[in-house]
Image (cartoon, rainbow, N blue to C red; front, side):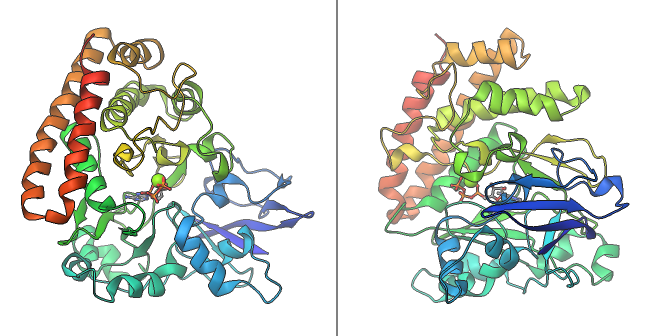
Length: 410
Ligand SMILES: Nc1ncnc2c1ncn2[C@@H]1O[C@H](COP(=O)(O)OP(=O)(O)OP(=O)(O)O)[C@@H](O)[C@H]1O
Ligand SMILES: [Mg+2]
């Protein structure tokens, strides 16, 4: 049995159910503000699932290398290791406002300190990266295929947290996500993502602060869900909002699984503004040739209690066609994963996102300008970073194709 906490308070218990499922029950008389998901209001009856965990509890389970590492370290003598075991291991430190502990345990995130500056200056041949994974894996309740860990940086706490929150000493949660890459898989992935996020910034989108280590081996991103008072925002990705397991993150359409779903959860007063941001982000993903914009790479955030949901800041942008030249979109548009042209993007804006025709044209032009500006930054970076030369050149080629075929007016 696992105890579920919301905003630092007990909310309910989740247990194994049947042969492969799970059941979650809210505590009696729990405050309405402790609902664990916008999709799971408080009720007496339990929330059951025949297979695996409910999507909100599964949302931050590590995938890829980190999951495999935890499996190897923790698999029992019998060899069994399921999602339940994984949640128990990484439950205390998670993205968003939920935490998980043993049924009788108290909550203590207790993430060890790690200096961001030390990572920025580290060399790939050093021991730091193996050390980071080793030390922080069990504090890393964060999804995704790329190797990554959650860390707690003391300087960031000084800067970001209000003096009250700093004084309270109670803040022991993570402040940053450190994303690493395996040179035998996706070369220069951190620099690739860094420049894609730069483009998003130039588009005027909301991007959390991010830094690239000096030798390009790590991307360090501020957690966008950490508030100045030390509390965390609610975060729910679009797998959760569509009641889908992580394994179905590539199944869905922009029209229904993203756009309509966002409309289901964002208030009318904020929807026009979020729709315009979403259109900018979709156009940017297409321009960058990011074939990995799946349901877990979009999310909403909200304040604890009945805070209004908004489209989350931008994260995880990568030009995937430098690694997989024939890559296509992760989600469908008009029933197809082919990269759309500008006309189709404009039609999407006008018919589904309530963006005026003139504004849609302006946004596409603006995204193109942002990418052109970032292209110059890539050129400059390439001069001092020979290791990035090939990937940098390839990114520029892909962006030129993206801009020409998908953003330029037709
Ligand atoms: N800055 C951030 N603050 C808080 N949560 C974040 C932030 N960036 C990402 N996340 C959360 O962490 C998850 C994993 O991050 P990210 O998508 O960057 O990893 P990834 O390994 O590249 O993913 P993928 O498997 O899609 O390639 C996201 O789905 C999101 O829930
Ligand atoms: Mg991702």
